[in-house]
Length: 469
Image 1 (spheres, rainbow, N blue to C red):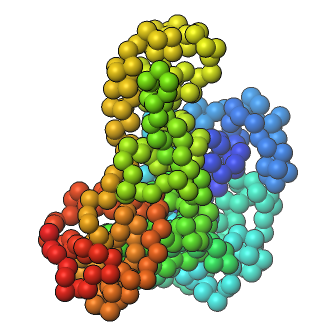
Image 2: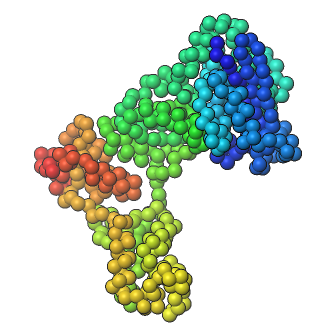
Image 3: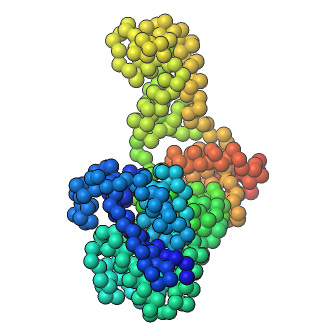
């Protein structure tokens, strides 16, 4: 049997990037003989009082202890060419991999999670956390939540498994678990294997069916597995991976359907770890208005004044007034446009703006820059943000598989697979503009073959009158 390294670490928190290791312990088992390595580490950062209460490791205890950088070469030798065994191994391995990476060491051991081992060998247990394993199997722990105490529990659990099932069976289980994809301990491999590698949307649930994350992909199973692989190196993915308790998926007929369904579900269920694609109630855009001196000035208009797809020279839209101002300010600074003339900076009449003093403004604020030049710079800078006019006479259908996605003035009407449902959508839908749908359909129209786009000259035009591009 390969040398085994039973590992536990204590840390200042759960963030791979910001938090640091305060203690590490390794028990090596080879040919029936064990060797121990343990050390406190100075994290060179604050240890929260809650962590001290849990582990007993205080700021005073780590002062004067070596840093991770100092012990990294020795620790790497302790772990090299051994099977890395930890409880909820994503956590310990992720922290150590990140720590080794910061000192220039690429750490890639074979990893075994004892949660998975427990689930496989003792499926009748309802829980497989370390406290449950201790109480269920009568293990002795002298120092819970200290690195060596918890590492010793893993060694005891391994020895109990060998005694109960035999070395041949445990070696077989070890090889099986090492061959498995890098899945969270509480996700069964058969569940992931049943996910089709087709377009669709996947849903990650936390405890009690709480919506944790919703994503989309053209290859569902591959994308889901990539989350778990990334959890070994990326803090956000690791945090999510530890919370996933169940996975569901919905197949779609293609990429467009997946994009639209993802956007819809995120707005409906508000998963805790999705930031993009959430519904906004503060939609706004810029409209240019000429002031008394002939200079164009952006004026913010609200969602109620927007008629997307029909208004010319509207720039945006933006999710909030704050976002609109931030983007306008960035464009002004990049293109040398006077922020006072735009209304971003407040100045006294006839006084130059701060940018003029820095020579980043050409003097529109005090009438030195010709209005024609100012207006040209502003319209050219805003051009990339211009809200597009709907380029069709009526609604369109985009064919995907056996169905059609229907759109009108950048709004999604729905999906239909037969004449009756198409007629129903065209006659009864109340189009509602959504910023994410607008971005999705604009991007998709640039790359889709025209043979898959159908034009309805009127919203209620019968299917037989569809014109194919």
